[in-house]
Image (cartoon, rainbow over all chains, first blue to last red; front, side):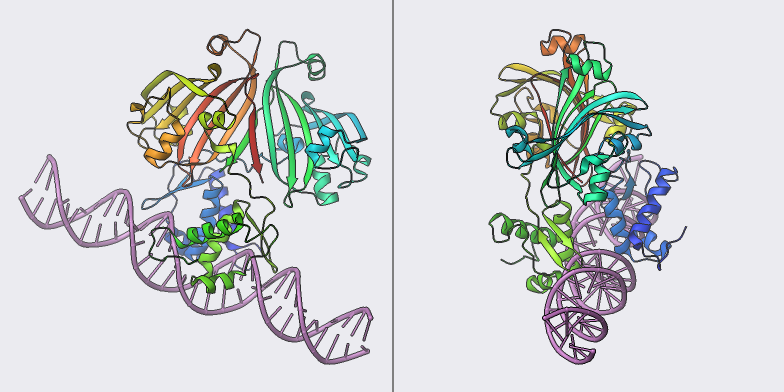
Amino acid sequence: MELNANSPIPLYIQLKELLVRQIRRGELRPHDRLPSERELSECYGISRMTVRQALQLLVKEGVLYTAAGKGTYVSEVLFEQDHALTGFSEQMQRANLQASSRVLEATVIPATPYVAGKLEVSPNSGVILLKRLRLANEKPVAIETAYLPQNLCPDLLRHDFSRASLYAVLREEYGLVPTTAIQVVEAALANVEEARLLELHPPAAVLRMERVTRNAQNAVLEYVESVYRGDRYKFYAHLRA
Amino acid sequence: MELNANSPIPLYIQLKELLVRQIRRGELRPHDRLPSERELSECYGISRMTVRQALQLLVKEGVLYTAAGKGTYVSEVLFEQDHALTGFSEQMQRANLQASSRVLEATVIPATPYVAGKLEVSPNSGVILLKRLRLANEKPVAIETAYLPQNLCPDLLRHDFSRASLYAVLREEYGLVPTTAIQVVEAALANVEEARLLELHPPAAVLRMERVTRNAQNAVLEYVESVYRGDRYKFYAHLRA
DNA sequence: AGTCTATAGTGGTATAGACCAGGATTGACC
DNA sequence: GGTCAATCCTGGTCTATACCACTATAGACT
């Protein structure tokens, strides 16, 4: 269980992942105390500052917590790194569910004033509309309608989005990486069309979500309206001041 | 514009706040390059590692971004310190609604295993339970049940929480400042008790939320279970990668 | 037994120096 | 004029050391 100083992977990352593995394997359990920074430093033959770099990362991620004068401890829950900014496909993969989709609509339309406002583009400019029924293990979970500025991702619709992940295509083909999003979520009763598509028997509760996603340069990548089955979807968010 | 080495405030925090002030005043504008780490180090008479501590904090917060081999730059938006981590009272104030509460329960209980896990405290240790009906302009909006570690805020319950804001008391009296939270939101149909308290006529949709709130030291401040009226509450979240 | 007081250990802060890979600039060369 | 290589600067990583405030413990004292 040693660190490799010649590896291209930084030592503090190696140590961080080593600790995460120990926690995942149960060798370190919640509220266990870790060896002190000085012990880790000596044990792995690296300096204390490097140890601290690894530990601080894990504290920031919520995996560990520290108590000055006492020690460093394993947190109760090891939250999965950020559900926050992943698409449906990635979320399902994380939950070990098989994601699939049925494309309900895939066209280019002129931006309505409302959508133009959300996307921060001119009205009537080209907007890609992608409406899909989302399924997990073949069972309907959500209806998702995404609007994207056509100039950011021309020819997007040549992909088959019944199988392809929108976020994966944006990232790999167009270099568009979501980094922030503003979401609004509310609860409501399913209407007739929603009940039909989601195979619900009214009355049934659904989660309605709107989201505007931006990249690091603060450009709007997409505006999405989604409707989730209340009984098959929970909505995680990690908030920071 | 100097740093004070004798101040109880760490140098890297002082530098961080100094940079934020410069950005707020417009002396540093989006996409401007900051002086290099070595220049800042010499300019303020502190070591480069201390400079990096300040810069890394700001990068983590999204205020700055770095490009290896090029420099450190100001991000496009300095997000409003946001809706994310405020309590019900603050949210209502922002929406120009008059917040009030009816205390349904306010006691100290021994931590159940489940709550102890959420709060990262020992089972059976003292936990403050505060259950309130939340109203906006006299109309019921939510039922909120908060659990707090008693050792963090002893005597909390001597306040009258039908009027006082929990977050304001935590901040002003105990110096407890929420900085991160993990929330889980789902939609459901209101049960009988919820419908009665929220004055709903079934069937009606509600938003159920669980939240674990932590401070900058990653200590758990509270665990909250809330039930919101779907028609009177929208749930905002600002997410970052 | 109970209380106080060193003392040792912990994380938090800070310094000074070093090397690396990658971007940017300059200048020699064709 | 255009190309390529050397050079310098940048952030990224890492070491070794030091002092502080806080916590726990063990031992001396009452």
